[in-house]
Image (cartoon, rainbow, N blue to C red; front, top):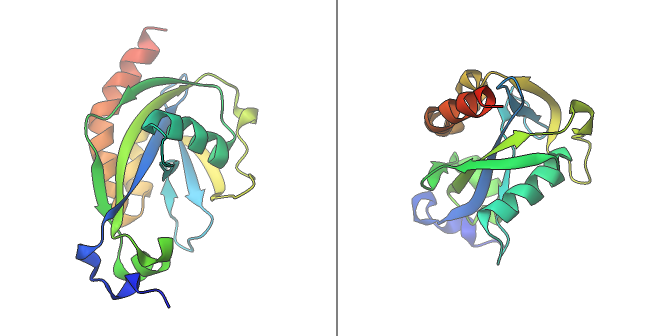
Length: 168
């Protein structure tokens, strides 16, 4: 029996992970529709940081695992860790109920490949669909508990994307 679920949600730690914003030459960002959610849950790629791994190493690995993308250039890192809580029923179902949510280090990557490199039918698929979208649409498409995070990273990353692409 899993005892983690008996620990009150707010007493549980956050799971460390990376969040990944990948933008293309016209400033759109990769957005995937979750496979495991009946709702219209769209999100940016993200995933856990393995022991001994830096956030940037985890970012490259997770990006390849979830999207098959390897042709990217690291551009920037959000200056602080951002946390979000997951609703209790979902928190009990994920990660054996050990965590209350995630603490994320957000990374910004420029996509240097071509779209047919992107393949979400990976060994452990997370997405059923994907598209390039204007980053301002992210908070509108995201599940409620991720909307605030996406608004925060947009404030930092959209000016960088615009500046990066105008200098190419």
